[in-house]
Every structure is written in structure tokens, then in C-alpha cells.
Length: 303
Image 1 (cartoon, rainbow, N blue to C red):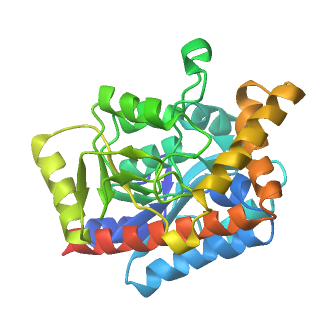
Image 2 (tube, helix red, strand yellow):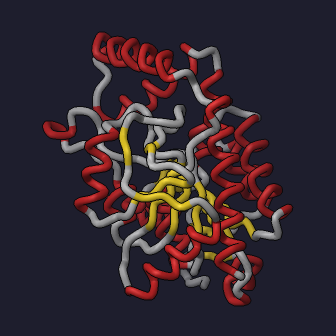
Image 3 (tube, one colour):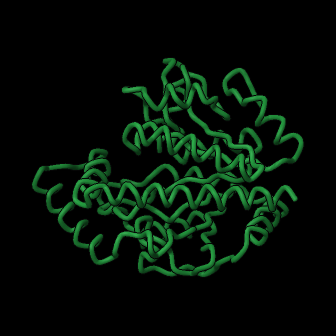
């Protein structure tokens, strides 16, 4: 529901009230993650694909300081062209609101706002997690702690390949966040179908995924459910190639003295340049698959 601080579009409010399927979509993918003009194309395609399934899309972002659940096409277009959009995590929401900023919402902020609006399914690309060297730097994504207290189902292709996947899975366990695969117990690594790590559970249909939501809610538990949906094998980056690219990327980052918050964008940019843009194509395939699956789960939940 809308409040003075958060705007929920009429379309989203009505769909949630009527029990119709709704899927939340984040906005950093088109404000920060993809180059122009593909960013806008992908954002609008995701909405169109959900509508073709009979699902209401709820793209979430901050527009002129207003956290918004269900951005209009005009607002999405404006944000996709904005040069100075803020990257808004949960801690940044009051700042963006007070300063009247435009912003793309991360997984953490999107999940929070989606839950506020009563949405139960959220599709994204990759999750944040534990960064390499976190034992010294304490560098962990706020996605994890937010998802530990936000009851929503998140469809992703695992955590980003540049992260410490093993440590991230351990952290999810500590935070009592269930992690399941869709049709697999091999945990995906965003650009690849198999990160080399296994998880304990999987579901094979959208209907089974929907029952997870019902079971969690019946128990009154506060955490998110993470459903890992791997990119198709014929669409992934070859795993050995990705390993070699990451080794070169880390070496160059060390040589250039790249540390802290600058590390992730540096590594992702390196991967994109080193693959001649193929990693960008994989990123888009990942997102398309997760949006489609999120729509199927939302439809199953509504029925």
C-alpha cells in the first residue's frame, strides 16, 4: 500500500488486493548494470514478457526522491537515461528520499519495498554476497542481512561469479535463509550453470516453489527464500574461460590498486571487455530466464 514515503502504483495495489500475480523487478540492472540503449530495451522487455503471461510487473526504483513500486514506462525511460542516478541500497533509501534523488534500487532495497507493497515474488539477475578477503575487510553485501528479515521469494542465477561463493553459502546458512535450486542441486555461478558448489534442496516446478512460500508464511518465519535458476548450458560462458578471465581480472585489479567498493564494477567491466561483450549477453539471458520463472511462480501462487 502507498504511504506518504512510498508510492505503490494503482495497478500494483489493485493486483495485490485482488490476489492476481505480481512480480517485483529491480532497477539497478538498467540504471547501473547495462549500457545504453540495451538497458531500456531489457527493462521494457521484462515488463512486456510478464504481461504476456498475465502477470503484473512491479519495477521498483526511486524517482525524484520517491521510492516507487510500479514505475511507469515514462519513469523507467527517464531513469534509464539518467547519468547520475544513485545506486540505492536499503541504507540509502532515506538519503535518496530526503535529497530528492533519482535512483536504481539494489536487491536489498527492492526486496524491502516489494514486501512493503505485499508482493511475494521478486526476480533479479545475481545476488550480492561475501567478497573475497572479507575476513579482513568485512566486505559483505547488505542483500544478505536484508533478505534474512524480508519474507519474499527471490529468483536469481546465484551470486555474482566474482564473489566468494562458498563463504556466501555459509553466510546464508548462518542467517537461516533457505537456498534451493530450480531443477538442480548444483548452485549456479551467474555466468555459469555450476559454481562448483552444491545445495541441499531443489524444486522442479513453479507450483512446488509456490508451496515454499505458503509453508514459510504458515510458520511465520521472516526470511526470504532464495531460488537459484541456472542459465542454460548453451548460453553460459565456458567455465574454464571464466576462470581464466577472473584470474586476469584479479591480477589487474591488484596491479592498479583497486580496492573496496571500486572492485566489483572494475571486475565486471573487465569481464565484459575481455569477453568482447559476450558476458553482457549472458547477463541478459540470465535475467530473461529469471523473470520468466518468477512470472510462472507468481501465477502458481495466485492459483
